[in-house]
Image (cartoon, rainbow, N blue to C red; front, side, top):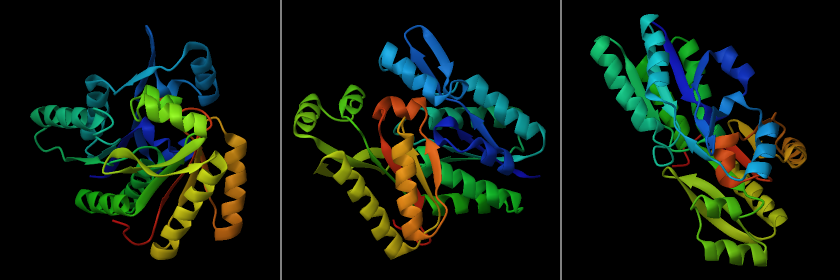
Length: 285
């Protein structure tokens, strides 16, 4: 019996890596009025153009049936499942995964299924999935793969700098007064995810200073805890991301990935966002 790793689309893992590591992905959905589609069915460039034309959409978790079908296929193949998903405080995906697990166990009494709350999203979630999939391919047991996943979560961080506060205001992440004052004074927050929710690490004047502060935070973490892997995220800000990667690769002498953030998370943070997801060799928490 092999261990198979299942995650959701907000991990934004490169599809080549998904294929190489045999990672299965279930998609969340984006909704513009009466129009709904899976976020993996639209490319990011097209989506952000749609958002310019149609406004800010809403999002929804995968359906029970979709999750059930994916898990059932794995169980019928004789595999055990480690399901790692977006923070339970950001989406109902985690609770739905537990519901589906119970449904599967009613039908398949000997099925082995574990659900892990990543307490984050994007490549902070993605890295926990990747290390899990590597461990699974090495032949480790379900319990061992789960433990490796949870250790990675303790060693990872996600930092991001929005270009504007209007999307965070729309999503209820900050109040109207804070957004208005921030935009007028050009105050930009450096955001992170801690304990499963988006929080403000600090605030500075101008996006340029915010990005520099974000970089310094990562470099301080690496100095204390060592470096694992790093990905630079962006939302419709490819050139900025490439410039950041060049600077970091020169400084750190390691290969750094690039990843465009998709519709579900992009909806809440907005175009122009620059971010870094990384994990370290030692626990940060």
